[in-house]
Length: 88
Image (cartoon, rainbow, N blue to C red):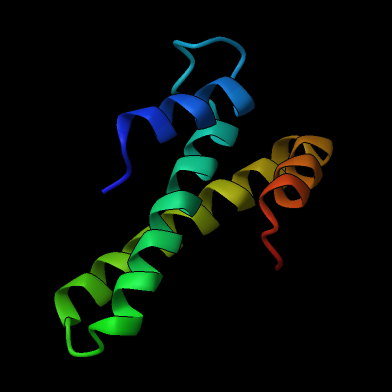
């Protein structure tokens, strides 16, 4: 689970203001942080299949948001992927 402080950092970094939680950039950043945490968890717990399923669902959600961002604004997509280190 991502901490409140970390989530607030991501919102201020990627959002328009501290209450902006709905933009695609903020959601992608939060999903990416959760994906990193779950990946680390699965390295030490390889048989945790329910967490693996949750991780795959998160990756799919992030992919759909990234695809939407490509269609609507390619410049925003490029900045988000560059800052988060996401490759396609």
